[in-house]
Image 1 (cartoon, helix red, strand yellow):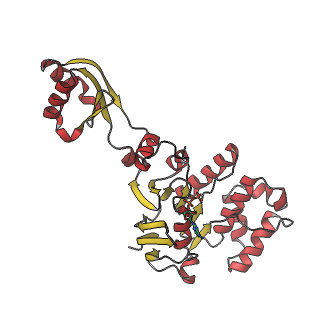
Image 2 (cartoon, rainbow, N blue to C red; image 1 turned 60 degrees about the vertical axis):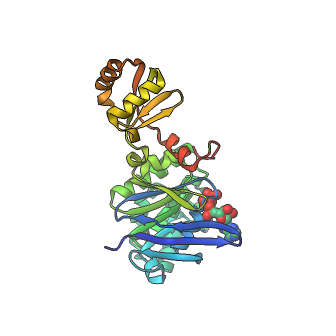
Image 3 (cartoon, rainbow, N blue to C red; image 1 turned 60 degrees about the horizontal axis):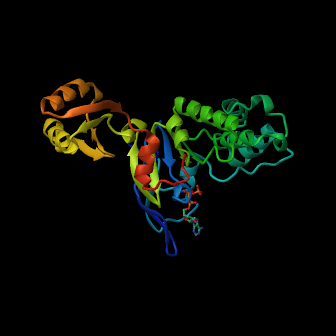
Length: 300
Ligand SMILES: Nc1ncnc2c1ncn2[C@@H]1O[C@H](COP(=O)(O)OP(=O)(O)OP(=O)(O)O)[C@@H](O)[C@H]1O
């Protein structure tokens, strides 16, 4: 099976700095994959290596099953740096120029304008566009060749809330239409809302990968009880030691919340006074901070 993206041991060093370290990344056909990490984590460097714009120090890249060469790039659309357009030409004229240059059929122009919701403004000069519209025109340009894979680097960077919402809608629409999208972002909320799977990158390493549900982990129960030691011991015997953690003066149990009544009965029977027992669903933000191991990361 030709995966849209597969890297093995991908590494990029700039002198002493390792920007990307031993990265094994897999993007599956038809998914919207979020490459999430704080500023400087190595996202742009990775995307540039995927596109053959930066040469890896070590490791391999396979795009749609082959190395990233000119042939592959025809099947890949990308928006990596701010798109370059002629300010005095309209959105439509800009796309026509690009289509001619890229060898894309001219009838793709109205189609992609429609896709990115710019058909109404297509006649207007690029210079009159909002930042969000400029970004969407950039996506339209990336879609001109009807790519099998779309790579977007921080597509909502610098956009206002309305522009961000438009871009999210567009990415969801592309995903729903079966387009494989790889997007990078430092915004947790963003990837959580639009991505099927997320890879978390920190200091050049992929430190976690999975669906939003996978990353959140299993639901659990938080128990406040006295004596805590006795409660922990009994809980370990009941559900298995590996499912019990003592955190902030209470217990966290990796068990389904519907076992609360049973657990309460068993703890009380063992002479433990249970003060509180409530379901606990891990917040993805908390997971993220735990993963990257710092509380002050510039990730929201
Ligand atoms: N051409 C270069 N020469 C030297 N160092 C570089 C170069 N390009 C990137 N770096 C460094 O590599 C690290 C990763 O940078 P990169 O731009 O890939 O991160 P990023 O996750 O995309 O962050 P941001 O969201 O800030 O763009 C950073 O420390 C950066 O300073």
